[in-house]
Image (cartoon, rainbow, N blue to C red):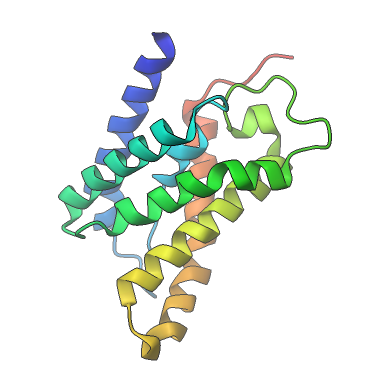
Length: 170
């Protein structure tokens, strides 16, 4: 029950933070700060794929409804939810993860988190910008946005964890 309440609060936070704050920021150079893929990363490891995809879709639709993007966020977040188990398996230690309950930076370690979440963020941003532009003549512009947006989004996601998530005690 406690985990459900925490995930519900995170869900609402990410919908409103992304939809009302981060989507309204104009940084320039086509940079988009996207922190909402972190919600999928922070879901517990034992979350089954169907509830994860459903929550990704609902989060994306919530952000799309505030941003008038017609399924763009929902589509890219569903891709992240679908690929999450594959990416976790590809980057998991040989013995698997020992003890972490969710995919945050404190339980996975900085290196593990940056590898896994960085890969998921790459998939997310690639899908998002390719669908946003949807024109082969603008592929260079999409890659420019991709390369500039990933480090800034990753920075804000790490900052969010250091500010709002409790550290695991050894």
